[in-house]
Image (cartoon, rainbow, N blue to C red):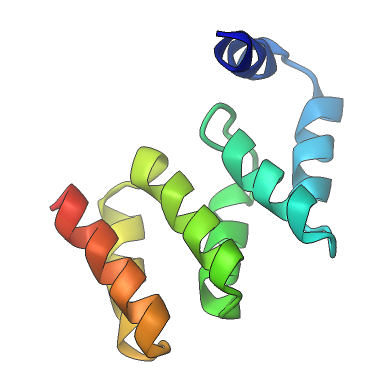
Length: 107
């Protein structure tokens, strides 16, 4: 219940500072911050957020790939799914498996 209330509060805060904070998390070198930033994108549309998620999928870092795909499972549109399919073609076996699993789930 607390996590849901916190998520709703984050989504309602209409301030450029909050967007900057989320963007900083997505660009962090600290993996824990990146994963939190990815999770916040499910509640807040941040400029360049989906582009960062795509970069995380391409990174090959297993936790970042999983986190980005988890976020995409909630916010992806058709264009995003098409792009993920294209990325899967040149990805490692594990990343390809994760992307295909998401596409089957959403398809």
